[in-house]
Length: 594
Image 1 (cartoon, rainbow, N blue to C red):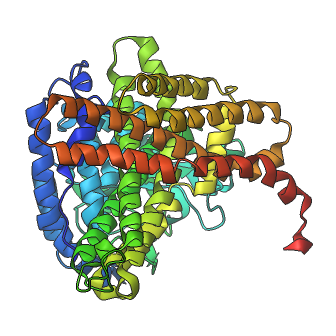
Image 2: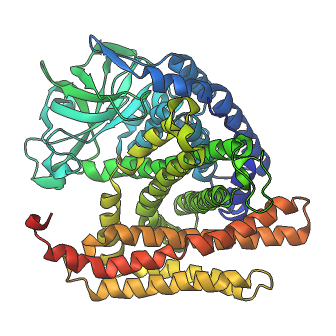
């Protein structure tokens, strides 16, 4: 088993210096997030992650899940861990107090979820769904539905899922065929199949609450005809407790490359009389509500990228400190750990720099979520809501792609030992491979960034973001010790401005633009990473001036920023070149050239 130590110092530094924890705690509704409370929450979460979740992670990978006569059997230790997780109140950490949650800001819950995903992503996918479902129901569910269902979902007593994908539709929700027909007492009966449903069936909880996209008989075609239904595994009796089994059946579970401990189910609704469900929100408005849950999931999948990357980095660093091989290239001395080799050190420093860039971006975005939700000034709330919307595809797409790269690089540090299962890094690599795919592939995220987020609003929010990057550049320009970081960050801002202008000038070249959407996503991710690393360096240097007794750590942060600017930031220019020049080539090529 790979040891895990929660990176509490990094987390706390970014919370305090980049994401603005103190300012978030000053917002209405966020007052409970005091520094002492947050520190205690992070410390306890770290203990639970390393002490409870990490030990059963390899068990889940080896055993996987199995389907026996319609029952899904989860790995050994899953039930005990979930009971502890639920009883400790972790499910409701950021969920509304009026339904039994603790109501802490998203900024506080984000590093906690990072720890869960680092130590056992397959397990953490289960309670993650409860969070997203609660967010969706808070927006669209009736008061009666909230009072009936939310307390049990927020506490984790009942599990939750979201059901979008169907065999014939894949990511194209317009092709959804699941149908809903009126039943007695305002309920509906659902008929059809859903696939790739994480934790769609299990016995870890006495009930499972499914949110399902389906079509009413009068539904218009396409995504505008989708309605959202709450469909429980067990119907509730007169006491509000699980009673009769609903007409839902798990007909198979997937045999996957990774996340073996998480059952990915194919669910059949309505094999007999129809699965009873209840309309959530207005008819034909289901996708808008489901997008709330999807956006929460997409952000959390981005957090999975940094989480798995962190675990891979820790494993690679430990191995490099222990593995003895080769000779020191400078002294010729043998018997030294491989950490002395320049290329091994390069990989490790590169891993850590990218981790800090991703963590800085994700935690800062989590703070934006809180500002958008709680800030009393509408103009300020609107600005950061638009920042969240703009960068959601980057948080999901870029961070998961980088997370995959870090797991791959960890195997390279291990060499041949990374390719065998006993070291544990192979599992990280296999688990990480899904995160660029589910909740919308990188290509889907990139299309969203280009079409809905940049072109639709003529680049307005992106230009606001660039102005904020320019402010950081100005601070660097005026800084005696960090002036060398100003030019590379200035180059990133200039590139973003040029690309924004180019995109708007070529709006008519639709195929060419979308052929370069993924390079655009990487470009913006790298640039935002550079921005966060520049802010990190400024904060670290300010603490150094205060001489807080942690100079080696703080100097290390500054040097990691310099390394990022030297190695990662220049890649944005290459992505910009690809964006501008590859599209016409692709559109000229026909199928016969493939």
